[in-house]
Length: 126
Length: 263
Image 1 (cartoon, chains in turn green, blue):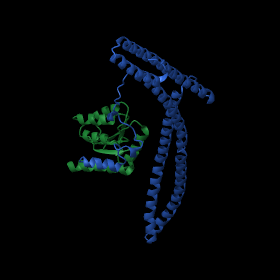
Image 2: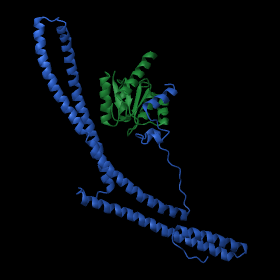
Image 3: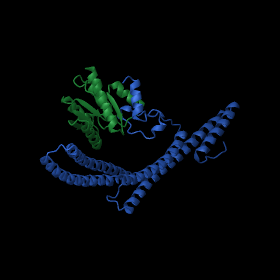
């Protein structure tokens, strides 16, 4: 299970990386916005995407839409971890096909819960 | 129209009102040449008021710019700021950059300490669990003399390790504690930048008031429609969430919304 963490702040990437490691996901790669994340995704080894929303260059919602629009990438589960908490934005993310939405500041428990829920759904769909 | 051209917007407005009455009166009695004269006078008054207000606006703008330069000079002298010619705004921008650097460094240092502590705690736990197994066997008198001698040695090693580990953890926790000092430093910087913003806002409000008078005399209308902020670009963390019904307050509310959408 290889996870791509996309956030423009290195400290937030590190926090998420450490939390994922505690959950047993040790294979992670990082990108600082959608523009740098897409080529990594297109290289084809990423199984799970964790992305922020508000980033310079390509934002998280644009990245999500690009992933869903790409035949090779569209089935990758996407968890959004962001400070963006407007009702319209959450609805937009849901419509774009997000698999989970965690608002910052978040707890380790919340992140764990959302990731587990996403995997439960994927397993149930198999 | 006996009134001389007065000063300010109020005078101009009363001039227009009086002129309108005069104009109607002249037209009613059929005195068109006087009516035209009133129109000309009004137009002239408008012209004069307009230039007067533009002059005021220009002066205010000039003062505001000059004040900023004076203030930034104070800053250079007062704080022995390197690189003269820095405006207050670039100084504020530098200060905010410093906040980002300081918070980032504190966060990284804290995480370094956590990264250094987690394996120590895990190892302590592993060794304690291993020892406890044999300790329980000892309690149940299930150890051979040879095993007992080994346990005896291992307990000594473990106690030394526990002591060293506690020292490491103690020192890491202290470093984490000290790193939180960034809150004080960044707080001070942000307070100063906040003062500057308040100051700039006051001056801008004054400029807007003067510009508004120019607009009303010239009859200019501006497109008032506020540019809707694009959700795609994001808004950043919401401040004053409680006062904004559009912003959800917690992960629970987000979860509720998503489940209402069938998630």
